[in-house]
Length: 553
Image (cartoon, rainbow, N blue to C red):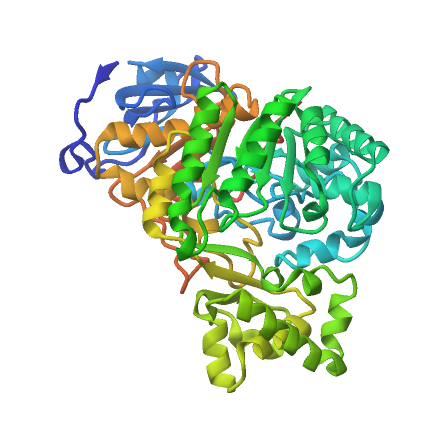
């Protein structure tokens, strides 16, 4: 196991001149290994620098690592000029329904992702009971995910896992239980504090979900109904997750002007509950708030120094992605009859007046708000255009354009929000406690966020030409450290006995090809992807086989 020294791309990562797969000569005796990858630069998920190693696969697991005899394997992949790493783990996704609604969309496999954590931001596919069950189609439709009509074929996490496993999983899936699911099941979407017995019921539902395999709980404190939750409710629900060593993931109340106070609230809850906390998509939104990121860093790092188990995730893009309705004042966004209210022409004048007054006191740069997806056919041309551009084309006020688009698509509109600084994004992702997370949602729509298709290759592309230990540190955050934090056993490392989730990439060709003009363009440069020892991507092409499993007992 020889150290490679400083990595010089033109010399070390040579392009292949031999076939990648070499079938070994037939023998009467069975081979010790089904696959062997030789001559690759191996980042094992733990050590920061690559080593020239051979890696053998037996059944679902890594059989051996070191200087191996290729004749012991049935098939050998020549990894000369390539990087071999553990399968990447995406800690922040909304892939809850992908196997059902986008069954052949391999955008994550083409990025080298073999495991995903879904159920983030307070919204998950399961458990689904009570009022949540009645509203789940509308909840996800507002984010661009349109579920098949009819009642969900599951209620519990166990039933959900069984249903999706039968459909087939392209990647391994770990799930969080959404606090929004729990609250809506217990008390609907009522705008009031939860009473003690209601909090206890939420705790019981969460414990049941975790007994059935959920890895923890997520909170969406800017979305309905999570924004109604007080700190005491959140703390007690987190305490239930902590009792089973689960993760509490937070889409905090503010990522702009109130960023520091939102971080303080999250850390208070983490300390009081004794919980592991993942801060979702850590950012400072809005130019006037970019300098607030330093206070957020200070608070997080002080908490970690005290022993609190706190991490975060972030994506390498300047635009966020959410339903368009979140730009409305609470008085309109929280109306239970908002769809009908916006559709009624008699209310338009009152809506316009309220919006103009609101934005006069809370300025919004409409050049930074781009429509992503709509359901109304007459607004399809608006996809990929900013509200400011649409207002100019239509010779109307931005508030009028906003109202019309939301009304015609019955609030089923998603949008890009260009609110972040590239420099702040870079600084966030450089932190040793921040892992890349795509925050992918509605991956299969006509106009998704490019982060769903390019997050991980984009990061590798930016790091591959630098010192090898920088890439190694990033790989460790995206594999072993994420696996350890979420309690994912036997994944995230290239060591004998671990599951054979492996990714072989060409560092000279790796590219996150998706952008805002072409957001659904597949990434390039991932040559092979193994899940549990089986090739899901072979020589750069998805094999159209599904080897994913659910993570969690």
